[in-house]
Image (tube, rainbow, N blue to C red; front, side):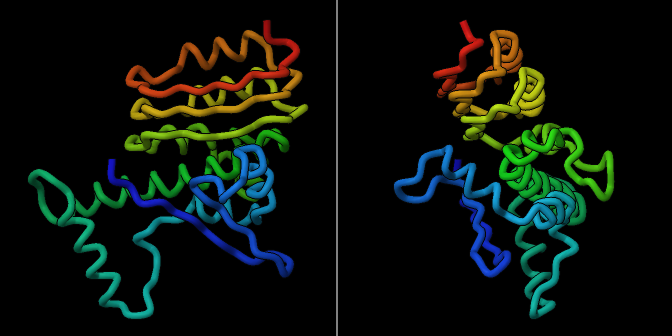
Length: 208
């Protein structure tokens, strides 16, 4: 699958904060998660609410050309407006899922996986946003070394896995509250087309 990587940078309290699709050089998935927990929560929320068609360009004609290209890249028949609508839904879903995965570790700590936007309750469910990214082929997430994650959090993640995923890598190493029940939730929801699976439950004392 030809898919461009998306990295997002901001400055918060005088320091650079960055979200990356992959680990930085010499960085483990766990330290990637810790790094991304420092990304401003308000920007994560804005990203999950954002719609690309509402964006602006320094030259207005550039936006028009970009939207035209998005519509033209859609295969099959249909009117320009139909093809553009489909392209925008696909792109927005991918963007929202990107921010949802970046927010997941923080959301687990806050007990906010199903309701991440505190100022607009009921509007942001991370599993729902991830599930809507129907063309996502890879999920790589570390929730390791968490004393707060529960079996119910694994169930929420399982509910959010898109059926399109073929490469799944999850780490729950050293999470003392996870048990066999949480693993069963994941097992029951594994996408049927998986080609690669890596699950790390090392040092989870309640797992038999």
